[in-house]
Length: 286
Ligand code: ADP
Ligand code: MG
Image (tube, rainbow, N blue to C red; front, side):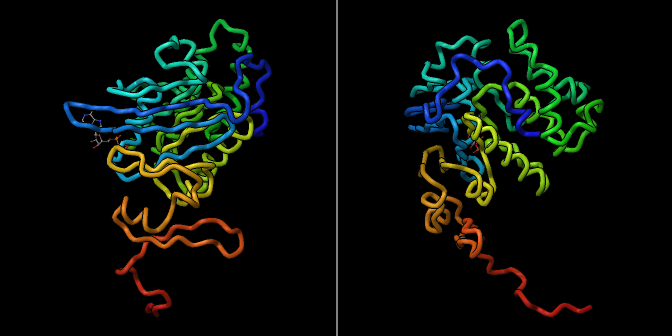
């Protein structure tokens, strides 16, 4: 079923080759009201990879993402999308190149789920790829597991259902570059895994995915590379096992952790050190 989400019956001639830089940000700085929110932040997301942006609350993740989409004015630095400076893109071309899921994904008008997902197709109106509309919308509804809500009004959905509708809109857009700000924040365990699995499917198809995550275990499991932000600066960039060291996590998050390797799968598991936790094996009254 994933295959049909990702199948593009009409290939964009300008599709990026695997490993090509889809997003390239150099020395990005953002100042708001005289306060430096981002300082000299650089990152690259290549076609075919999932890059997780992590960091504590207020570290600047959403601001960096907004600078990459052009929604946040930079005070310094450059952002290139598919090799072209952000300023040289028309909004229409950009919307066919990259899709954005904002953290505050509020739909206050009583649109149905289906209508919201169809909005993802708007950039393709009057292009040959218009003929994919129905199939792209149906596939996006299916893989985000919201088909049964398609006629429901978005404000009536639970937070997690609404988040999945927002993600479905972005997937229906079929752009090749995805920028997702905390798409898993409101989701239950299974739907978190579903969303991250989808990002991997997209990457396997050649898409570039930048995704803001809070859950370090999800980032460790699903990201090819991690960009760790702290107080507006990029603290570390690299493979999850290189970035997620106990010392670095403790310093940035001000929380001691253990970083374990799962004995069977080899997965990296990050566990907070919990001095006040209930002792394991304690007898509880029946
Ligand atoms: P994150 O997404 O990592 O939690 P944000 O990028 O949203 O962090 O915010 C980084 C910092 O910038 C925070 O301290 C936040 O309060 C501040 N900030 C973000 N947007 C604005 C704004 N429009 N005006 C003032 N401060 C802002
Ligand atoms: Mg944020």
